Image 1 (cartoon, one colour):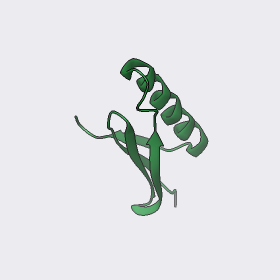
Image 2: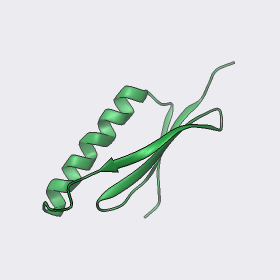
Image 3: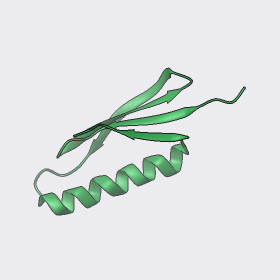
Length: 68
């Protein structure tokens, strides 16, 4: 039986939450933090890099983003 791994991301402008699920069981959760003192376009790049690292390290089958 294959385990399905999902990362769910709840986006925000400074801190975004994530959760990691395996076969519908919550495995881990945390925050993707950005520096609120910097301009929003730079902060977006910070957060994008952190999300990319999370996905690369976890190698999920699916990544789900909150519908904004």
